[in-house]
Amino acid sequence: MEQFSPQREKELREIEKKLGTSFLNPGMLNQALTHSSYGHEMGLPDNERLEFLGDAILKLVVSEYIYNKFPDKAEGDLTKIRAAVISDETLAVIGRKLNLGDDLLLSENEKKTGGNRRKSNLANAFEALLGAIFLDSGLGKVRELIIDQLKGEIEMTSRADFIRDYKSALQEYSQKHKWDLPYYK
View 1 (spheres, helix red, strand yellow):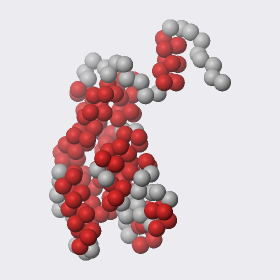
View 2: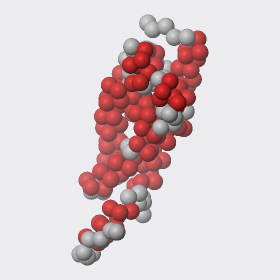
View 3: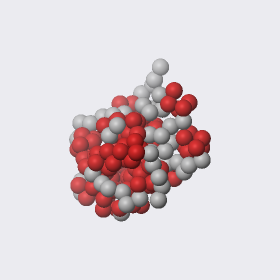
View 4: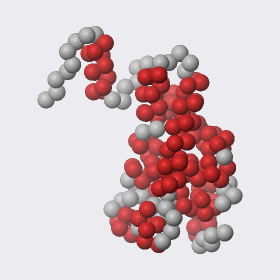
């Protein structure tokens, strides 16, 4: 069992409360919050492999959820909803909401350059947390967290009038009406 400073143990317990889970292996939670810069400096395992796993789990859970929730939507519509829901933008918002930046272990240089607020670091940390929860507690627990955190985003992006990518929307509209594609300057 890994030994953590009393301060880190307290931080990890707070994260568990925010996530609504309790890790059997707190080292897994700590690894999920260990940026590669810190892991490299300290010779510790970082969160990149957990992020890889979490990304796959996220796609699976969101795909299953929207497949069942929207039985009348076409595959293309489901793909658009999923892409919007699991974007780095959305995941970074969740990371900020959970204050993951405060708990990320970063190298000094990464800290100085604002790594704890960087969208990619927050999104990656959230995905790594998903991988860690999956390995520690199973698919049911991680599914609960994903749906809880993303349900509102799924509802918003599934609305017929939702547009996040205006350029693509304009091109699709032009094609639908058999117009020439827009020319951009």
